[in-house]
Image (tube, rainbow, N blue to C red; front, side):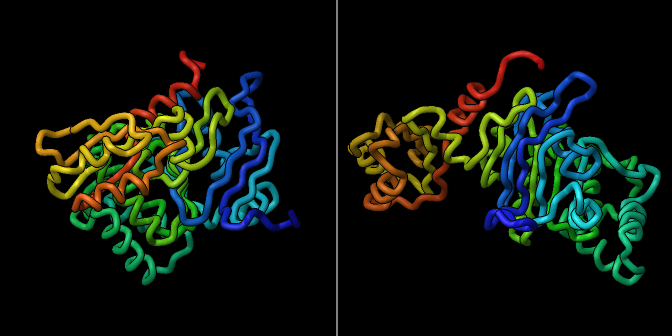
Length: 321
């Protein structure tokens, strides 16, 4: 590949990344690719090397070996140019807690070089995106953890970065706050942002990510699509099918398909099923066609997270590294 280029559609390319703290290797030849305008999950147990990788990508650490290309630029030689287009949200609050929400965002916007008139409009926009308009004048120290996480994300967005690096952004959030945070990420993807998000809980990212890298003990055990990860669990695939309303003939129609191993009704009303099928015989189109032939209206059809968890357990090692 020519100098200054990278594979089409790839915004971030990591090749053979190594890093050690004294004699303790945090990363051992990690490689992966992140597509432009996608959400890429970076998943692994605690101590797997996630934060070290994120700090290298955020230009806070220099790798000991390997290459990172971002926006077609080499991170080692074009560090300052890359940094202007990054937004890094660490796993701890990088906020001035004695400031109000608006004061904090204004401070960081000024640090990024935005003039006074531009800062006000930008801050209002990120407060709207993160649904924090009503908290703009509150002190950060008086906010809940979930609200502080939103301020931290808003801070990352004030200079309009193209690539967001998010380290455990949903850590410690209650279920509602976690769901709302994930919806914000989806909106950012629709706005054209590329999001690289780490977590130690695979199921947390299953419905969010286009692709995923699983890291364990400093090594990338898998990197690819969520569908590819599902396939690692074996030839049998489990999907959860949800209908807009009950359709009596659906279960029998699915059970009659060659290769379908079982259809489990998840609710008594018959509007949600778990379908187990042999992926070498049946594809998802055949299943959906069978449902529609019976007059069913599909509202969602997605891999069962249980299989993703099984794949994660097979790819990672027990115990603490």
